[in-house]
Amino acid sequence: MAASALPPETPHQANRMLTMSTTAFTISFAAWTIFSIIGLQIQQEHGLSETQLGLLLATPILTGSVSRIFLGIACEKYGGRILTTLMMLASAISIWLLTYAETFPLILVAALGIGLAGGTFITGITFTSYWFPKKKQGTALGIFGMGNAGAGLTNFGAPLIMVAVGWQGTAVVYATIMGIAAVAFFLLTEDDPAIQARRRGEATGATLREQIEPLRHLQVWRFGLYYFFVFGAFVALASWLPRYYTGMYGMSIAAAGTLAASYSLSASVFRALGGWMSDRIGARAVMYWTFGVSLVCLFILSYPATTYTVEGIREPIEFHIGIGVIGFTVIAFVLGFVMSLGKAAVYKHIPVYYPNNVGSVGGMVGMIGGLGGFFLPIAFGALNDWTGIWTTPFMFLFVMVAISMLWMHFAILRMERKKYPGLKRLRDLPEAVPPGQEMVSEPTDRQGS
Image (cartoon, rainbow, N blue to C red):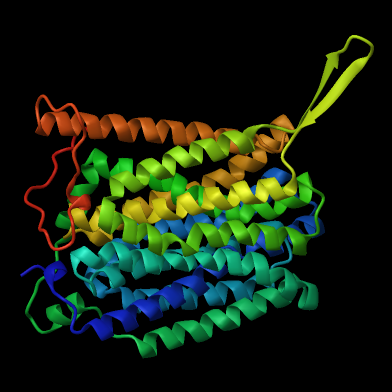
């Protein structure tokens, strides 16, 4: 019997494990994005350019992203409980060591270790998914994904701590909390049912070859592209928006962090809603809404503040077009909301299409998405240095979303017409099957879509 097919012991146990894993992930995510706040003070102390600041913001994202594929595979053998604990402890030590770094290169080295906190996403996803049946996985993983709100906690709370004790003191506070949380997670959780069954000899795990086999399917990489935006761009914006508010609107770090937190929270807390919607109406429908609304929001945010002069009958007439701080914050909140839904929808696909390879496929998708969080802050800083226009990062994201939506639509259309010749209207795929109904057959778009 496959380990992934094993049911949880009791609903109470499953809910308790979900609560603990979500809490641990929230704290880890807060640590993963710590440079969104303390990075601004580091930039001032070391005289960093916008591109260098982007590199600092992105460095921990690199480690957290690349580690996901390896952690996902390792989870199938060792389980998410022990790996989550180890990643949190390693990150806590790196945050503590950050306070001893006196040069920019050494700060980057410490940032690489801090990035291990981001690996708790895939260890938590794998751990959580094995505690719930397939029809409830979308909701459960959506709730777990609310841990992304840790970025909002950092944007809101870190400025207050930094004002009181400086950025080094803030790092000490974060390291202490991470260490305590790691120990508490290990003591208050149990190994998932799959790991327990293997120890009793009632189930066997997949071989390494079986785990990585699905990674050759183009469909996995397409899911990764979706996640590159809904998660990678979320991480990038959560880290970069404080700088945008201070530069574009001349706000203080504390005020900028508070407004950036509204985006981070909207892009996190509604993930549970996205999981519930994916269980009810299908992940595909949720992704269409995510991409469609994102295009509208990004088009508005892309438009730079512009002053026009019209030659009037008696004298030139000038008028200004631009988004004020309130309008920007509202639109960013809406953008975060639909991105939150999309993050849950992407991961709803994985246990449906690849039920025996959640760790490896989820790790690959998570790695690709996390790499978005690495490359995009650097791209944002470089675009600002190159063009001198604050809104160019939103132009870049607009093009990315347009490409993703087109690829998704035509891949689905091609797959459906291959499976149902002569079909004129798109049908629902297994992720949209009503609760209680089993998947009859698996779609065949793995190779070519």
